Each structure stands twice: as structure tokens, then as C-alpha cells.
Length: 161
Image 1 (cartoon, helix red, strand yellow):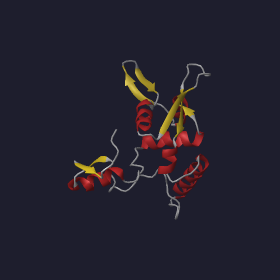
Image 2 (tube, rainbow, N blue to C red; image 1 turned 180 degrees about the vertical axis):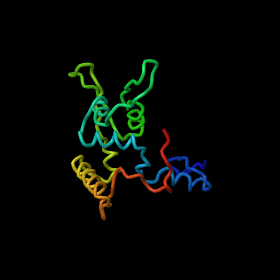
Image 3 (cartoon, rainbow, N blue to C red; image 1 turned 90 degrees about the vertical axis):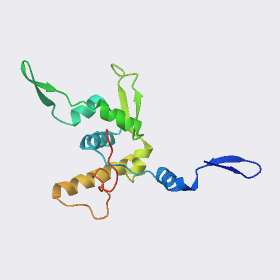
């Protein structure tokens, strides 16, 4: 560390050998590679605008099957760890719904998430998702539309859970 003194203020700054590392840390945010589960959760939250974990798990589809001592058992697709991870990364925010039974958490996309997927509004994010889904169903990729939930290039570092 270097001490910079201009006569009226003193400031700590990184040594020159750390400039590359510091530049990497403060460069503009990018949406890192998402797992399939993370993309599904974000897609449900964006499409609903605000939603509960129960709704997310219902929207994500059929429960998983497990074989127990009494035969096959259905287990719901638990999204709690994925939601906690997305909350910790600042992609979602959560508030208690004091008026609903059980006071569930209600999840909403953050302005940071919208910024990272290149949308200014929630409606714009929904349109981008619809365009991506339409092109995916037709087997093509949108020409000039960025797909917010596509897996990104392997050159970007992968997100680990």
C-alpha cells in the first residue's frame, strides 16, 4: 500500500504491482454464468414481478422422485439455496408479506439484475425473455437481441454454488 498525501488529505492506494488486480475488481459488473436452476428462478421472478418461494417451486415444474423405504416418494424442487445465493449476489431482494398466511418472503428483481441483463424496466426484461424463448423454440438466436439467461462464453468464470 502507498500513502498519498496532497497536503490536505491523506489516502491509501494500492502499490503499482496490484493495479491489474484492482482494475479487475472494480470493472463494471457482468452477469456471471448462471446454472439452469438459477436461470429458472430468475425467469419466474421476472415474469411474475414479485413472487413467493412456493410459487417459484410450482412454476419450476414437477417434483423430483426419490426412492424411499416405502417406494417412490415425491420431493418438491427446493429453491431455498438458489434463492439465498441470488439474494447474496444482489440479484433479488426479499420482503415479508405481513398480510399473507405464514408471512412468506416475497422476492423481487433488483435494479442491479435489470442493469446486468441490459433492461431498464421489468417490462423490458419480460420482453427480452419472450424474444429469447420464441427464438429458442424456433431453433434460432435473435440477431441483435441479447439473451439475458443464455449461458455466457466459457471465457467468463463460472459461478460456483
